[in-house]
Picture 1 (cartoon, rainbow, N blue to C red):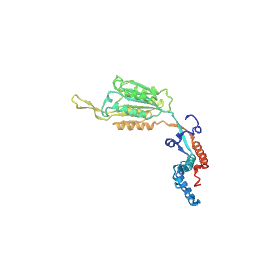
Picture 2 (cartoon, rainbow, N blue to C red):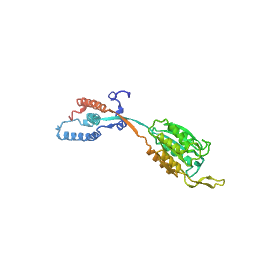
Picture 3 (cartoon, rainbow, N blue to C red):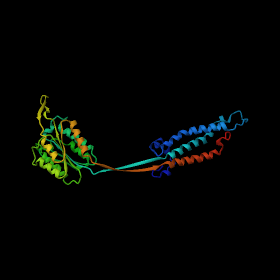
Picture 4 (tube, one colour):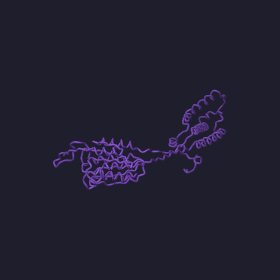
Length: 350
């Protein structure tokens, strides 16, 4: 059988009677299929009427009853054919169909730059295993949930560096995030203003209606030559929303183990005022994450706040296959008519 032929030219194929074929169909009038159960009942009623109303004539027969001969089973062939004729007619009336649906999705998308602090303090272990690793994992989960949004990466410590341009190649972003470590930038410190400036520069020529920077840091601005407040005002001027996340617990935070295996601690206090001011000036929001679960929920909230509207077109192509079963029903019906006029119908009972 050649599948590229129209269905009515494939009617002779036995595949139309496979159980898998029936399972693949959708049925326009599936309730009609229950009539197949009534066919044996109709045959029983027919037999009952025939048995009660037929005239009986006693005649002399040979000692060996002709009905016990093996050829007598042929008299059931017309009834079997008529059964299949009715069953196939019901299948055709139920109108088997195959529907192919094509969905086209598109979105205007959002331009997002994720800006991650990789300064030495991100090695603190109040997050498992440390702040930077936790931030990288949550950033990857955030990217994985986006659809056709262009996302870029910026890292910073004493200087800021654009790691990835705005792209929809999320696999590339994942590999670049995996490569982020503390050795990427040699300059020490936390240059929040410079990080914002580099992130803004990535979006300066963007034509997207929505532009977002997610800045994650655990320290105060103590490096770089750009003031964070000035950078925040610049972001607002370009229509960029800035979400800032302060990461880390206050108080004594584990930093590692000493030479004898003892846990070493360091006093940590995050000055949130700068991060709050940046978010306020750039029409965003400030968040504080003190553990991995909190960081997850923050990114989930930003994900909901900056969700691009996905539009879709659906195209359905429906093909009817009832004609195939109708062909088979007519063929079997003609065969039944032919056999009804032959010796197979058993003239002794007709």
